[in-house]
Image (cartoon, rainbow, N blue to C red):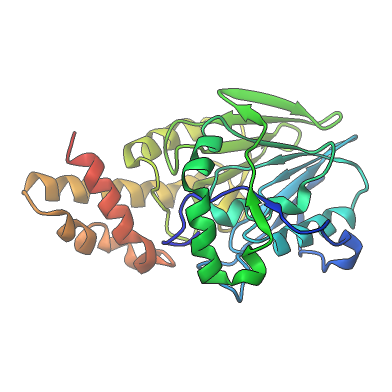
Length: 308
């Protein structure tokens, strides 16, 4: 995720068919529990050098089908993820699930456009993509270069989740849940019932400072609901696979600190610029990319809290 691109688009290749997975270098993945594979993204901004590969992406293999959870920050990364899948199974990829619409999670979608594959997302995701997608494609063309961005166009998910939806991969059920506005207004989680592994998208950050692109109050409320999910481990949007629900502790502390600091500034009549400079600065040493995102988080929180 970058400061300049917080709600991107799902993409489809504009040019001819993508190269065969056998011709691609496979993305390194770890099998964290049987049938569940994860690639750990860098803790960084999206750049040409890292090809946007900063988010955690993964896939789940059932008896009859595969589900992909997020596809990375470029079509090139998506093709490498596809190669990693094909190195492990020839079962059909039935679902590509986007946990939300930010570019580091969906810019690889085009690698998976083919007959028989359904794109899945939160009920709000198509609107978010239509509203902001073209602008962010243009922004990333400048940030990452035309060679990574020019081959893509926006496509919406066709299978939408409003509430919960269970998908069957063949003797393996995964439960998708759409959440109220929190990190974004289109956050979706995926729970593998067999292994109790939760793919949380950017509702969970570890190491990388949390990013508020939706509602700080909503984020804190969703955290309270999240911790009740029957998971044993979580794949966060950013950071290491961790035990559940203890993985929420640092994120909760940061967001609570930010909200308390902003409320105190609002009560004292301080302007939004002061919040951007001072709110939650006690957290600086605890997070990577703090100076990239905290001021923006504070500004968003101030704009919300001043109207309480």
